[in-house]
Image (cartoon, rainbow, N blue to C red; front, side):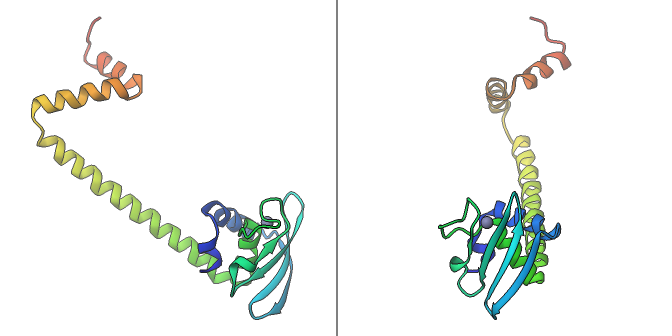
Length: 150
Ligand SMILES: [Zn+2]
């Protein structure tokens, strides 16, 4: 398990923001796998980064202090120590986003195909369901566009 896979999505994104806005100072190398840094957030936080054993990393911020949590300060330090990892993280997020958009496009096109094959009775049932459960403006818009009186 790496630092990124051990951290929550929001810690990764906020860590990336911290890295990009250069909030990491005083990076010191202890050995090939361990580094310390000071990350300025609301206050200055002391980070100990362990690349080999991510869960042995620590930070004295309120979220991570005394717990085995990989917070945004630890992630930011990781991105500073291994700059390629920030690039890799961004590329991977971009890839996942594109994959999701492709998936949604395929799904939409399949939904339209499905609509085209539905019977009138089933279409009416489906629309009635939408009128009852979708936000009210969808029904109101239908009534207005089709000039339906009360
Ligand atoms: Zn922290």
